[in-house]
Length: 263
Image 1: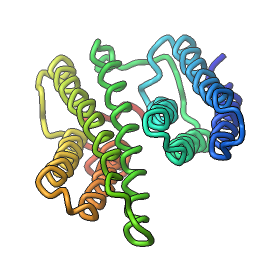
Image 2 (image 1 turned 90 degrees about the vertical axis):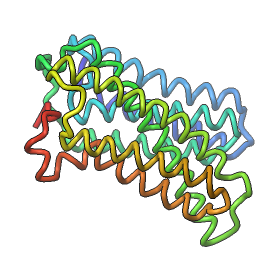
Image 3 (image 1 turned 135 degrees about the horizontal axis):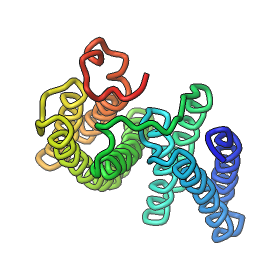
Image 4 (image 1 turned 180 degrees about the vertical axis):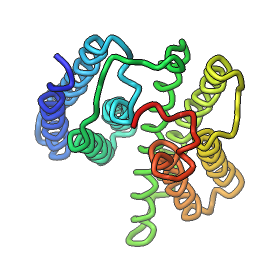
């Protein structure tokens, strides 16, 4: 059991997520049964990650493809929690759609998943740093989906007065995890390289991401009536986040980064 089984598990989970989201959207099917189908899809993919972890004998968090696995499982979980809290069925479709997109990217871009783990990654901060970061990325992706939907309503319809409260809550939680990710990363860097912060290209973009969401929160706090500006700020912040996550690998500055662990 290993990466060769990825297409099967990804396909089963995707079908379960899509069928249950469709059933919940229709509203004429048994809601508890559809929710159970959704959660079974989550369980299937968690089982795959657990088996891959056991097969590799290390946390599957080293490569971009491996981090996309965590992203693809956190998004449906966050979508489900938002659905349960605010009863927004559309967020299920958006979060499941984004998760499946990342699964497809993984399928089309196979990587070498060996057991090797370089010394810098053999740190107790490795797992908590990656987990909290990817979880924050998933939360902030959900907030971006809210922003895109909000902008659509502003330009082509009418936005609800309290619509941004959902985005605010997602950003507050996501920002908290993002901050923990920064702190864990600094502690890890001190242990691995002897410095808490070196303005490495990856660290610089991580700081820019953190500042971008801080600007959004300040904008919401001091100018709550400027909803369009806030939604644009939230959308742009997510673009900065994407550059920090994997876009940095395609920039010339990546050649000098110590955060390159795979080709």
